[in-house]
Length: 367
Image (cartoon, rainbow, N blue to C red; front, side, top):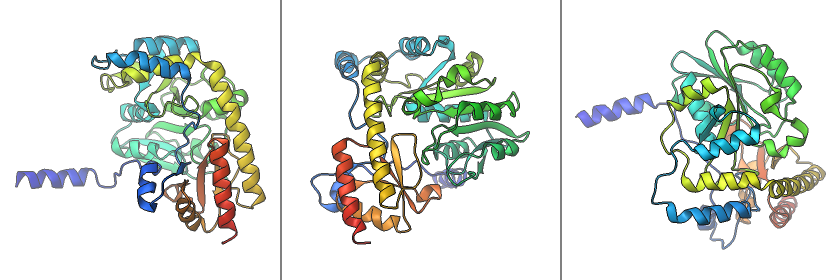
C-alpha cells in the first residue's frame, strides 16, 4: 500500500512534465525502415566531427578514466576564462549547455515565480521551468519566428525571476543584434536573471560581435556549448559566463563531477584549434546558403536562418517527413513547437545535403 501511495504522489507531482525528445537516432530509422544507410539531419550536429586536437587529447586521457575528473573542472574554467578575458569565478560548466540552463532556472525560479521565454524558443526552457515548479510565460513572436522583445519586456512582473532568449534562436534560426538586446536589457529590473543562450554563436560571431563584453546587466548570463561548431555533442560539455556571485549560487546546485574527464580535455584542446573551427563554420555557411537557395527555388523555404540548420515549410510537411525517412533522410519535425508546417533540416556535409535535396526533389514531383 505504501508503494502505491508513493507512486500516486509521484504521478501527481510530475503531472504535465515530459522528457526532452531528441532527433530520431539513425539506428532507429534503420530498424523501422529496413535500410542499410541513413543521413541524420535532425540534431544540428557538426558533420565534420571534432577537432583532431580534441581527438588526440581524449585518446591520451583515456587511460585515466578509472579516476574521477576534477570535480570543479579548474583547468577548463581557466581556459574558458582566458578565452573570454574574464575571471575563472565567472565561468560555470555543465554536462552540455542543457544542464547549465536547467541549473540556472532551478537556482533562481521556483513555486510562485515566473520564467519568460518566446513561444517558439528552445523547448528546454519550458521543461526546466516546469521541473522547477515555476510558471512559464511563453510570449508569441512578432512574426511567428523572431523574439518580440517589446512584448517580452511588457510581460515582466514582480514574479519574473528569469528571462530566456536564444540567439540565434532554435528552432526558428532568427538573430537579434546586440543593440536591440541591450535596449531590452535596459528595460528589465536589475534583479532579473537574463539567460542569453548562444549555442549557435560561432555561426554568427562575425555579425554579432563579443556579446560577453558588449551586453550589460547585473543578472546577465551568456551560455555556450561545444556541441555545435566544435563537434563535441557526444561529450556533453557546455558553459556560461556571468557575475561571479551569481555563478557561486548556481554552483551550490551543481552535481559533483558533472563534466567528465574526456569532455574536459576535449573542450580545452578544441579551444586551441581556432583555424579548424573557423574552417568548419565557413563550410557550414556555404552549405546553408546552398540549401536555402534550393528550398527557396522550390517554394518551401521557411525563413532565413543564422545557425547551422534551415527551415522547410509546406502544408504537407508530415507527408514530406515520412517520405524523407523512407529514403533514409532524418529531418526534425517542429509540430511540438507549434509549427506543424515546418521541418528543421540540419546543414550536413556537401554529400549529405546533396542526398537530402535529391530525395526532396523526388518527393516534390509526387506531391
